[in-house]
Amino acid sequence: MIDTGSAVPAAVFGPGAAAGPAHALVLAPVTPRWDQGAFFTPVTRVLAGAGLRVTVVDTLSLWDEDVDSLPSLVTRWRAHLDRYGPVDLLCGNALGGAVAQALLPGVPPDTAVLLVSGPARTDALLEARLTEIADLAAGGRSDHALALLDRRVQPHGHSPGAAGGAPAPHDPSAARRIAAGMRMLRGVDVTDAVRAHRGPLLHIVGSHSQLVTERHTAAAPHHRVAVIPGAGMRPHFESTAEVSALVGAFLREKGLT
Image (cartoon, rainbow, N blue to C red; front, side, top):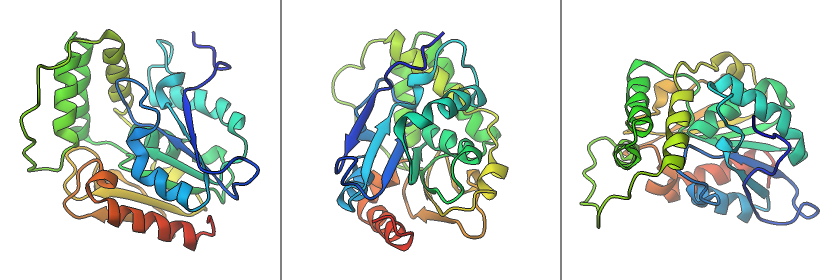
């Protein structure tokens, strides 16, 4: 059983708590190991540049063998959120986005939300692709799981260049994280929680994503789903200028700068 009172791996960017007019909390996607927030660098740069204090956390840090579903992980995070103080902007990427949306019923109703490729619901095709990656990892083939994941996060039709060097050897720790994280995204549907959220919400997805697409999003009439042409699961890296402009405008419109 994990000790939920222990420190969660986190990276903090931007001004200190006293200087920052607003606080953004970012929940990470499934990564084979904690990457110190590198997965969100283009967006973090915009948030910090606008004067926000940004805390990026490892979503899977509260996972263990007793947490076998998204609802059980969300329960852990709901009990942990107060440790970060007031959150003005709740962000999430991929798995982190799903967790962030599931947390909405328990946060202040005016909390702003920024999501990148974070599913509000899944379907048979997405679940089949996630399961294929999870099964490779759980079967002792984390190298193949990571290679397949890398192909799936690319835009549809993209032909990645030949990988340099030999594939990394199987990593049992990375395999457990990948398998657990992918499996938690099966059967997700937090549509009602998202549509009931009265605060502002911006969800960014790629038009050519092989995993999370516009059909996996949910939004109320006052929310916005922005589809980035030609992008895959990482539109903030593939179309950095466009995504940065969207995020900057969202912050200004919602008074978060």
